[in-house]
Image (cartoon, rainbow over all chains, first blue to last red):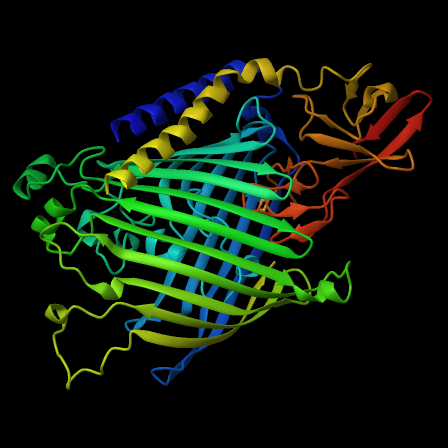
Length: 406
Length: 143
Ligand code: FES
């Protein structure tokens, strides 16, 4: 892990050096020059989705406005812009649920043609869905489970990110970011890292994380490799010592490595992604917080879709994609000795369905997910059978939904 | 277990190492970009260069600090030309040429060689510029 960090730091220094050497700052092309630009522009956009979900096995159904998001951007100048996304989850917010949150809120500084810097609350490039989470861009009503359980999309944190083209290459882009770290107390094998994110609210800043990605694009193929490593204990040394945890910048580290590849041509879309989370000090975290933190989580999926309208009209602008996706999620891939294995957190599923795009920005979706998990650990059941409804390890869920983005 | 740890370590090292290595050579490669265009002139709202710059190429990129955005000029089969701004119409980030299309790394939009959007979220085509053939030169109007 130390080697990884050394690489990240060296990389950042090297890239920064290259900007400075590649770009001669003159009054005309410096960041400040943009401030005099006449091109001031405010953009408004948005996206949202609603779905009907019917668990055919448990005979439960509900319908929900999953999310509605308003995007507001403003261009202060050619060099400096503002981006924000405000999200309402589940239509309203009250004591029983829902969420109103900023999904992104950052300033973007265009350093030169090929490199820009963002500062604020942003979404690092980790996986596919994290950055590309508009419902019009992925198959199915539910985002891939691997990209919600293992990579907690939409994962946004506060920090600074450098993005751009890898210098010297016409086929590679990079991102390199420093963000606030996670909260070890909230990591568990069921929700993974999801509850450990700060998402811009009063994040602990004694622990930090570094994340980087390389994205290559060759004709119809895209290949990405991304990594994240950061401290998960932001407590003051005295408090951390009393819990026997290592605090500080990269203390009690959490690391994630992800790779994905996608292909798109002649109506076909094929994607595959693998993600692995490593928490070497999970045993210490469990000793301090008894939160059943796993030592390792992993997951992968592969999906393929084909626009069947192309069978009738090769140049159609409409899209009716028939797709299938297989996923494997292992929430407790490796547990420390003081962790409790719960096989419910390991599951696989197959989703098949249709995505209909009558015109860009609008999608109608129908899909069926069949999932199979392990059995719940009886030690974790507070009200065992017959009080509790028996757990079904095999479940089928039907989803119908709509989505939009503009 | 140890294999997976090794995988994390090696994967991260490979990706970050390649990033580092490529960045080291940046200035050398960056300076080669528009050097191949003969008679290139860039004025406030106009680019001009000798048509001979195309040679056997079908596509030329003009990436110059004097321009707000990179410009791509494509030679069609019938010998005419069109020029486009290499800027995504979703949230105005730069697009990249993939070999047979254009791709925006920020949210994954793609555009065909004519600039038409082929993958969401972008919905509008890449901005086109007027091209004028004037003798042996091609003029691209940037307004
Ligand atoms: S800015 Fe290009 S896809 Fe969003």
